[in-house]
Image 1 (cartoon, rainbow, N blue to C red):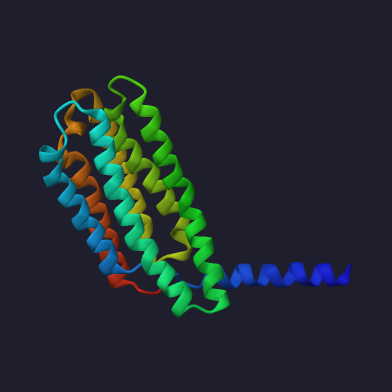
Image 2 (image 1 turned 30 degrees about the horizontal axis):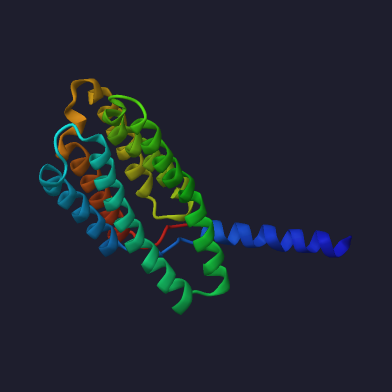
Length: 198
């Protein structure tokens, strides 16, 4: 019984240590690349997606999101194998697991909106809102300014949802601008504040 209590206390100590350490697996350069991918998607959409083709619209933006996820995941995986201690690996898993539900929610929302006529107009705003939730969930382990990035995505998502009835959210720059600004902002925060102050 004493051993179980001691192990629980050690786990609690590890949890508190992890919360005081700043996660450095997200890099500013990689986030800047994800912003550039969003801009590229805005330029590519008129050439790849016929107007009104909801399936191709969703396929394009999911493919770009998958590319960004692969870029970030590749960097995290490299760190995991080559650089990280056991404690840093625990912190990495904690931060990544905080963000994963918002990504899964984004995929499910995309599938659901494809089933509803005109539902895709709600997708840019919904994705921005879900992304903000992922940012807020990870915020305790990231530099201070990350909370403002989450707030940006929250406000941008609400604005895009308000514009959905006008049809403007299908415009390539609705999704492209929202995520390009957000990811560039995140890159700036990570570049300027590599460690969370005590």
